Length: 127
Length: 334
Image (cartoon, rainbow over all chains, first blue to last red; front, side):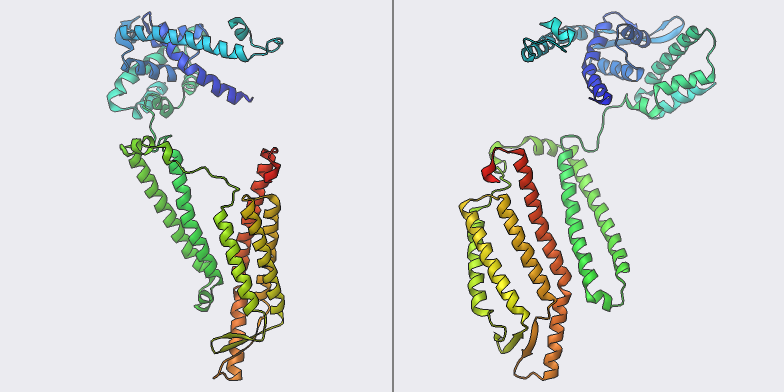
């Protein structure tokens, strides 16, 4: 498989996960730049061109609340999870857990039983 | 160093008016935070080249602004396959008549007799073709763009019934009705041909008497044999109603032979003499030469028709061979 295909599939897989990560990270109030750094420190690099439109979309859907406030002598927009966002986050986390379990079960079911060469550690751990 | 304000101004241009201030304020703050952090990391103020590199990393203004805009399309993914299909059909409907028109013009004595060079005729026809094509594409695009934005799209895509779907197509099956008609037509042709066209000296059309050259005898037998063979293939098709490689190859051979004989006949000066009650020898000879000349002029059309027939057979043969490779377990059908 060429690297471009892998990259496209990886981006597709990440897209939904990023929403979950952003909602999860914003249980604590943060502004855009620190949120981006926070996600990057946890292995979820996200460029500003993706993050800010995503934040605006989630806010327009009522999942986030924001306010402009002065911080370190500069005006910054702080985001936090709204009560509705909190509910949705829990539901999404349940869905995430179910999906993870289903995928592990499906892959475990079709994995060769006697020979385990080449199987991914993450998949083996799930069985 | 005004690179950042210029960058923000360029992004602002592409944003919706209501959101411009809010988005630009946040973007500006994010850029400044990034610059501050970068300065701290380098331990010195940033140069213009550093700022330029950071802005390049963020992407072009239009691309950055585009991410804040809702996804829009003139014709969305659900309608697009239908749109593309209609474009192809319309293109063919314009190209095929235009192509035939060009061919007729190329061969037509009227164009040459009128003192027009075929190239000038093609130039005019080419302009008309492009105009027709662009207008058609524009109209089709406009109609689909309207459909995209109206309720007609939902009606078109969601109001369907599985029972109204087209019947299953079997690309290699031969309808028995076609075979029956083919047999009947071939037998009628054989009977009429044998009864009326056997003697090259005695062709009567009303008071007109035609004498054909000896070349006709070859053509007569060729048509007779080929028509009988065609009837035989149709009879086999009636019993086993699907195309096989052998039958397509046999049909291909018949068509090649028939086309070759017909094309040869057009060039063979087949009319030897024409006679009618008030005919003078000079006039009769002139008519004979003109008829033979016009038959010869039909030669390119005959070639064209032959090529189309042969191409159809070759395409069918290629599809059958492809099917044979894909379904090696069905030898009976190939």
